[in-house]
Amino acid sequence: MIRFVLLVNKQGQTRLAKYTDASMSVEERRALEGEIVRKCLARSEKQCSFVEQRNYKVIYRRYASLFFIVGVDGDENELAILEFIHCLVETLDRYFGNVCELDLMFNLEMAHFVLDEMLVNGCIFETNKANVLQPVQLLDRSG
Image (cartoon, rainbow, N blue to C red; front, side, top):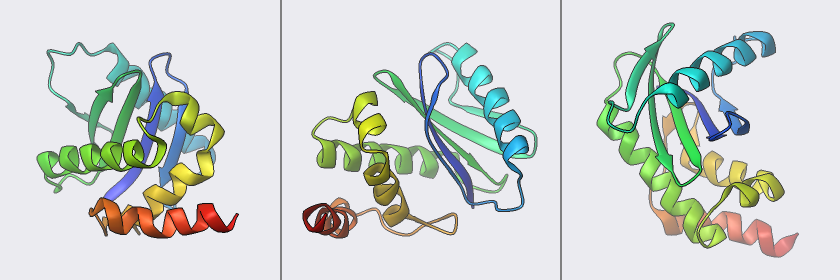
C-alpha cells in the first residue's frame, strides 16, 4: 500500500505531498519528509533508487529538477512502484505539456487531482492516462 507521495525539487523543497496514512501528525510528517528528502538527495545517480526509512520502503526517481518519492509498506513491489512513478510523470507531462516545477507551483490543485485519480486510499486505481485525464480536463473546462 502506498503511504505517501512527495514531489521535491533539487534544493529539497517539497512541491507536492500526499499522505494516505491519516494516523500521522503534521509534525511526524514534517520530520519524516526531512529525513527522506535528505537521504534521497544525498545519493548519487549510480546508487539504487530504493531505500528504507523507519518502517517504510522508499522508492524514488529523478526527472529533470524534480524527485518523485513514494513511500510504501514493506511488502510492495519496488519495480511496480517505479512504473507507477513513470506513469504519473507521463500523465502530468500530457496534462501540462512537459511538466516542470513551476507547473506544480502554479497549478498545485490540478496536480493533486491527477494524483487523486490515480491513487485511491493508497492503492493504485488507474494507470490509463486518458482515463485519468478525462475528469481532470472536465474540471479544468468547467472552472
